[in-house]
Image (cartoon, helix red, strand yellow):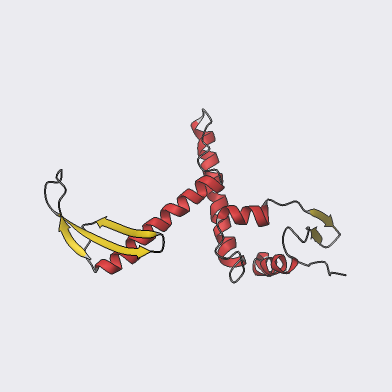
Length: 165
């Protein structure tokens, strides 16, 4: 619903978009003040909701990849920390988009991906032509790990996996 509204402290009325719904938990009302032209439903769905999703991604980087840890006294050290956190986020997003599509982790948050795929121990056994990552089956299911590796092969070079016995 769209209407003009003016709070007591505003100089003039402004365009507002209201979304009012009742969920099982109770009312869920949203009010947007905007000067953007366009259909109210389109503005709510494509601008307002996208902005909220963007805020969630920023929060995800801050909490799960420690982008808010800028406690060094030196500016360059803090800048490097933020740069490394941003690079980790970009790599995690690429892993989600390329390696985790159509898996149970396709829509997982960065913290979940980090915990289930990256922050795990592995035994690396190297041979003259290849390396084998030995992971506990409870950490990452072998089929999921194989599917991820297959999807993110570097320059099309196959990554050999040890056969299960």
